[in-house]
Length: 461
Ligand code: HEM
Image (cartoon, rainbow, N blue to C red):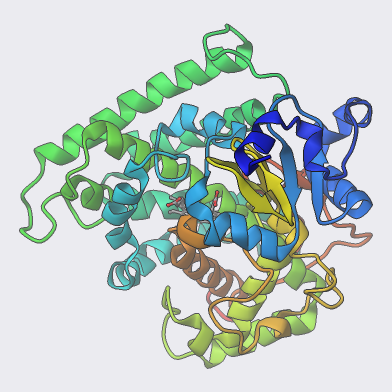
């Protein structure tokens, strides 16, 4: 029998990959919804590196072996698209923006947006990120004069949203743009609910989530249209950047239509704020638990001449950067990515038909004991002297769909750490237990991240 005939005749279970039965899934229903990361960890432990889920139609697999992950996301990426529930839910808010798009136009948009993340432009954005960190730190921690319990997750959320807002629309950050940021953040919460629904709901069905999402989306569209129109009216200020030198200006200069600009703006806000905010909250927690590591960051920052730039930290602040890399290993905010095959392929030695869903969880890959000795320990020295690519490490994805905001995010994290740690010491409160990771758009600490903040006697708080 030819491969294609064999594939035609194949039923889901025929791929011969072990995994939970429908009965197991029904019993685990509540825990899958409440804590999908632990569920994935459990099935990986029980069934191994390739796990099959019982779904009608083409197979749904969890791929956990770094070689299979590389195959799907990188080597064979052109045969694996983003037609999955995860990205379909996202696209209801972002439209076919860069992150959710599976369309051929993706590569064109990526080329158009790329200059916004080039090094020269990011160097300039450093000022905006510093201003966002300053405003939030002064606003929330400026009043702290003695040790105080502070929810640092709320602080990093504000910084994450404000930083991406300033980078996108520096000139318009009051009013409309601020509203857009908050509405987008709300839309992201609705997206998570949709992505988690086990039963697909028709997008027209008047469920409470659909109704709220439609109204949020209408408001988002109106507010984006206003921002774009205002900026177009003011165009012509500079020959090099007629629409201004922030991301909105760049997107408008690149010749995208207004609808496309809207999709990319909303995408950047969704992809760019919760991820960084969550990563920073976990990083601050890991440093509060490990005072020597925290002191070493502070010493490195004290020896650094002048303000911390947004780029080049592997050379200028190697320990601080290693702390960030290790925190992103232990707490990768993007805990799951998914792909669907557009043709037959081979994954983990099994032939899989077109339409196969593959789920990859950076969270699980980062905790493999064969790749990371003592995987649950916080040991930034693993990353000292590491090159740009490290095996079994993909906090920003892998292959052609690698995060476009990677350098921005890493830079933002170092700048914020420097702002907080040069002025404050962080400790865990008495009776400390780590918050439970909660999988939303990013992995957040459930109930916040309460840490004890103590001003240092530097005169900079
Ligand atoms: C710590 C922070 C961040 C993490 C962990 C993160 C993670 C990721 C991951 C894993 C992907 C790949 C998704 C996939 O393969 O399906 C991705 C893509 C993307 N990210 Fe990020 N991200 C972060 C920050 C940002 C920021 C700050 C921005 C923008 C301002 C951004 C914009 C995007 C966009 C537009 C894509 C889609 C790229 C494409 O497919 O061409 N991200 N991100």
